[in-house]
Length: 581
Image 1 (cartoon, one colour):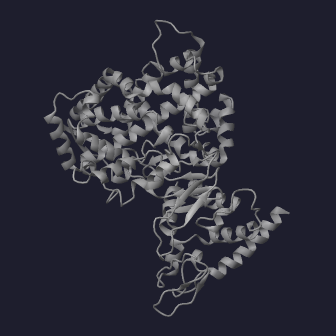
Image 2 (cartoon, one colour):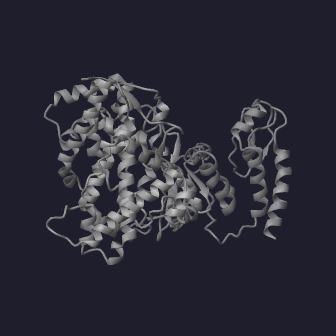
Image 3 (tube, one colour):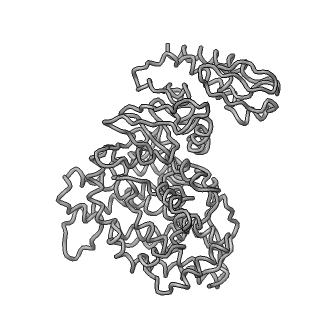
């Protein structure tokens, strides 16, 4: 019966779509905005009825341009057809009394298929950009799903992520399945469970504790400079993406397990692992909707999985098994004076955690998150920073001048006190965007209110009541490219962090930096990432390089695969070392 209804609806949608396609350049080219509008005199503005938002295209827009700006005919058929069969959708399944944005966002199946799955799976991870487009069209608050609201307002950030004591924020379970690490601290759904897991890890990631890593950081930076020196003599092309992946991985692996992965000694292996992580990230959007496929692949015996699993995914499964083996080894041994202390020996011996929080599966999830996030995200920031230091000589000159004026600044803590190198790092973080997609929060026990700032028609600003259980989000793309906060937002400009004549603007920029998120669920490894960044950027300033077959598209935010991903097919940032400064 249901299939019959859908077939009839799609046929009806076909006729509706065919009728809606403009046959000449005189017809209005936006099907979303054509209803509810009265005809207007030539050259005048259309009259609005029922308060509907109307956006007109240029009436000379050609038919081929209409196809480029609006959904394809096939998508249009799907939209109209599913709307016919889903208008009866029950109003009791989700809180629908608060309508924000598009009416069709209220239909579960339609919205999830057309604008939840298609842009992330069929199209190359453009959903974050689609949401930005919706905000441009409809304003700062937009309903993007049956129970999902996106807010593009810097003043609302703390309401979503850092509301203060007494206000709990849970994660949205439906958006938490992409990477399959649900029992990690980052995958914890409820506020209370996250707090318990986070408190067990916090001592290891304090600024003071990270300061003990200075010998390891200095050793790894020395290895990087040895690689640069050899490449200068041999004129070898280096892949900075592989080098920084290995650097960050070695540090976080040592910190987690008390032993070194030594990836800087094998850049070929670093390249393979970096590419494999990229493949896993590219599958995250698919896994968000079809996680059972990933889980099935993981459950296959190695002899079968080796034949049916793609190589990159297979290598990542092996990576998780290797982590599981290390966790198993740690859990199998009791604490001893000869044991190298690490995060997981600390968790094993913690009296504050119940046995369920020390299970092999949970600690494997925790380790997977720490290794992947502690490697890939800072690698991206280092790629961005080094690319612009090479392509923007004035920035490199300013950095070198500051470092020359402070020759005694060698440790991470000392370098972090220097304003310009800190500005370079902040700008690299800003254009890396942290977690790039929606990072929703659910208010489990309170309603949230959003009041419009101003209205174009002079009416009183409306206050929206968002009931408890609503999934609220913004994104780093919306905030970090907000031109009222970051003028010329896509330009790499460290000077925006060193202004002295407008302290209010600088304070707002710092408050709106979401690379590490805000609130109690902010990035656990923020201080570790900054320590890695500052010593590596200082080392960058000691070498002259030129790019090799690398463009800005190799460091630009082109695709949202949970983190910022450059153009598909990018080989990374490749360089030739031309001299030592």
